[in-house]
Image (tube, rainbow, N blue to C red; front, side, top):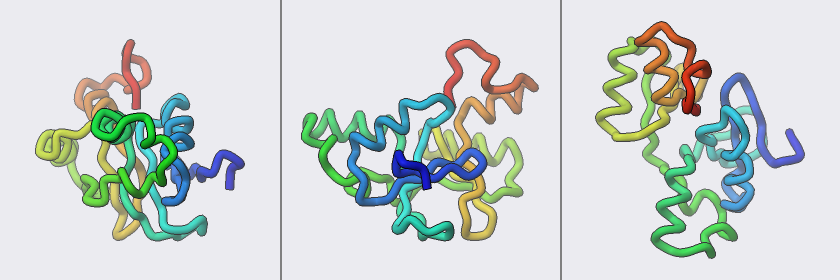
Length: 139
């Protein structure tokens, strides 16, 4: 467990459901962190509560003001987060982004989150260009 309250496995950053929104924003501000997987406990196989993005935080602050930063992340987490199977084609992944109008989706291997994909990851796959090499790209 990192001292920042998050665990990183592959491209996945997690945060415990009871951590503050302010802590989540500090993690989301780090390079290559576009979304956090909110988990029930700090164990390796912790149940997933949902997905939290900067957009979720912005919407909560717009609706409720800066007091949101002191609240627990589970209160503003998208519990019905968009996800696709690890075997989904690039077209199916893009469809998930478009259908849900989101910037991040979970890539699932059975019932486990194996990665968090950004729209830029899929756009890079479609163009053959690595996502991180386009100017202005963020995942």
